[in-house]
Length: 113
Image (tube, rainbow, N blue to C red; front, side):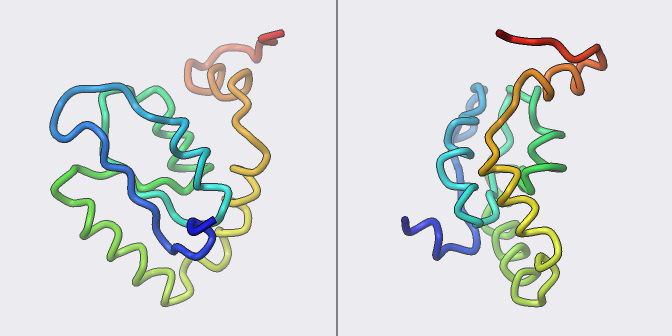
């Protein structure tokens, strides 16, 4: 679990091509407590939720290293101390699509099962 020792985890996927998001990669390492810095991608449906609840930093490919450096500096300054546990717990609780999708689309909560 090398993710548990990382302050930042990077996902660079599309390499300047239009593609869908690899949301499953977020759930692989985010529960360990590192801050995900992710290349923007075309599949934007979950981005606001992942930013607000999951602490994900989305950025352009050319800005990924700068964004990661900024996050590390903020962690070292203690600026993530108050939110890191809540974010980690959100990831550990799992993604509940039946709550996310209605929030994104502004409709009543539905049951998927």
